[in-house]
Length: 297
Image (cartoon, rainbow, N blue to C red; front, side, top):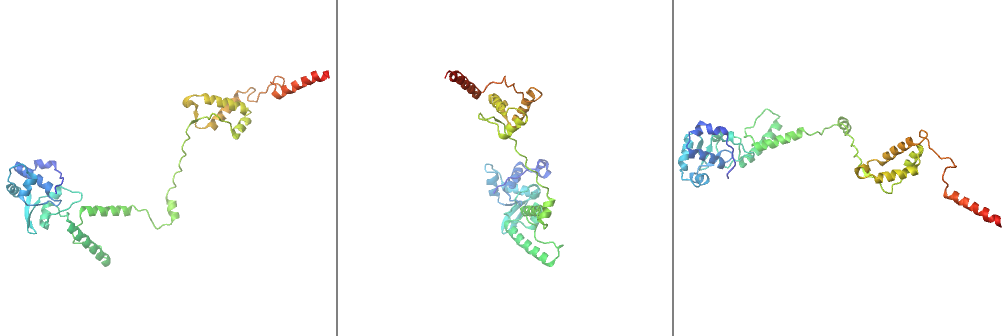
């Protein structure tokens, strides 16, 4: 299975690479794509030609010999088959989850620079052996021993690192709940959301508290409420919206108090100048009728 590989900029000025023929340069880069993460590939010239040079008339067997003579690839036998290894493959190609499918002797792994890359079977054996070694170390109490089992692959080591960091970041302890509560800062109180501005309802009437506030400031609550309501209902747009109508009412009453004659005292008309009420008018009419018609009887 072909894989995406990276090309270092220094490759183009490398002497070993620059002395190759043009076709051999293309072949080695194509082998990078088709080699496994351990730098191994099957030494099959015809298969490599179909994968890398499908439309070119080239002799891949001769090109492999050219690469081998330049010490860029190494041919070896394993399990009765012919394989090849790319020199220093692990130095320039680093897969996130490395895996190998070509068997490779230890000395060839050093040649490819991929000693740490294990196959699935090797990882299973390594996990089993590592578990046995860890058990033996705990039982013997010797923490200075080192295992001869190959190191785990990069992905396993990364997973172990995540577990260690997770354990180090664990804040649980054997202290009592009270001690932990004293050590932790108290959460900041949540601030109240500001009120949204709104218009004064058309049927607004002053509340008992608002009436008492007006009377305490010697302002007529009934008359002031009528003027207050008519004024703010008639104000257009956003200017007629207030976030706190209670505060607006108090400010209005205070202004009314300052506008009263006599330095803020309630001004009352003399009794003779005051307009008569309907009851007073009715009494006067009744008295007039009695005087006029009662006297005639």
